[in-house]
Structures are given as structure tokens and as C-alpha cells.
Length: 154
Image 1: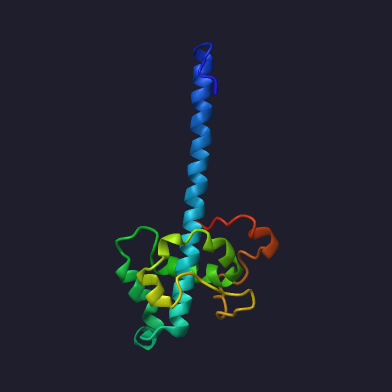
Image 2 (image 1 turned 45 degrees about the horizontal axis):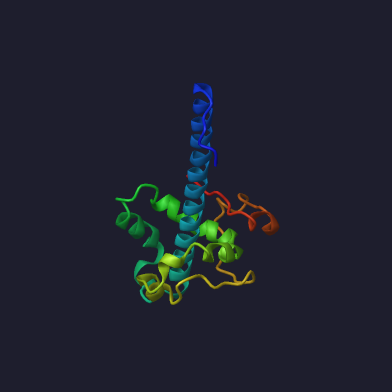
């Protein structure tokens, strides 16, 4: 790497290019992280609804109760919890992409909650039906969304 900067305009240009490059990298990293987070939260909720030992206690009130517990976290409210679950249901096959982002879950409380550290689903796994609000949204063919994670933001 050459450290020779010929003039002031070259200095300005290289700093600007460096800034834009790493700013874009940061945006991509945040988008991927939020997509993984949203998918995993949806997976945990869907799994709890099917297999949670105290699921009957919460029943139809599950999303309200969760929303109350997460009032202190920006971006996680009742509506977004439904969206996370719908996102997971629409894209259960993303588990292969998600696995590469879940090393932080090893030997954690998550494995106690859902029985496995990471989602081990097949494309044929059925988790239920998608809510009517999301049924006609986000319909992207599987081959187009497995190469890159889908950005899912609110």
C-alpha cells in the first residue's frame, strides 16, 4: 500500500472513498444482524407456541406479555413480534444462512428454552400458517433469498 499522497485533493478523495466504503460495510453488517435477530426471535416464538411447557398460561396473550417484557428495547413491540414470527414462517429455509451467525448462542439459556442451540429445520417443516396481513407480502423465491439474507427492517 502506497502511503504517498500527491496533493490535498488526493488526500480528500482517499479519505472520502475510505469513509464511504466502511460506512457501506457497517450498513450491511447492521442489516444482516437485524435480519438474523428477527428470524431467530420469530423461530423462538413459533417454537414456544408449539412446544413451550407453559404456553397454555399465556395463550392468546403471549404477544402482549412479551411486549410488556421488552418495553425497554427499541424495535421490539407487540407488532414487531408478530412480524418476526411471520418472517420466520415465510422463510424457514433460511436456517442454513442463520446458522453461520449464531455461534454466540453456544451453551446458553437459549438451548434450554428451545431444546437446541440453533434451528435445525428442513424446508418441509411446517410451523403453521402466516397471518393474513403478511400472507401476500415478502413472497420471494427461495433461490433468490438464500444467497444473501433478506433485509427485514421496520
